[in-house]
Image (tube, rainbow, N blue to C red; front, side, top):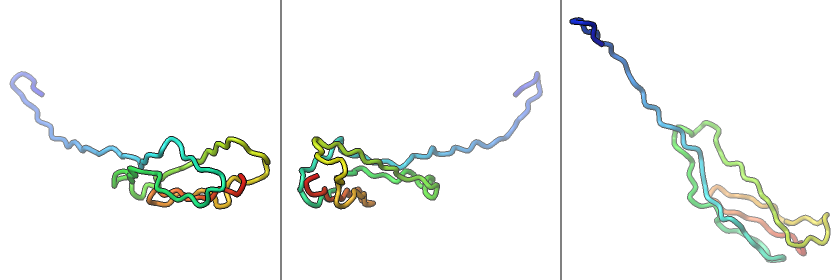
Length: 101
C-alpha cells in the first residue's frame, strides 16, 4: 500500500486447510439370488475409502439401507431372510434367504 512517497507494509499469515473427504464406497446396481439358494456371502462393496485423516474421529461413517425387490410373494407374513443381511468392514455382504420366500 503506498501513499505518495510513504509505504506501509503489513504482514499476515494465510492458512490453507484441506477439505474433508467423506467416507465412500461403490456397490453393484443389483444383487440377485435365487429362492432356496442358501448362504450368500460375497464382497460387494468395493473401492472403500475411510475419507481423509481429518475425518477420523469425527463420527463419520456409512449408513446403508437395504431395498428388497421380490418378484412374487405368496404370503405377506413370511420373512424374506432366515439370516438378515449384514455388511462386514471389508465390504462383504452376508445373508441367507428364507426357504420358499
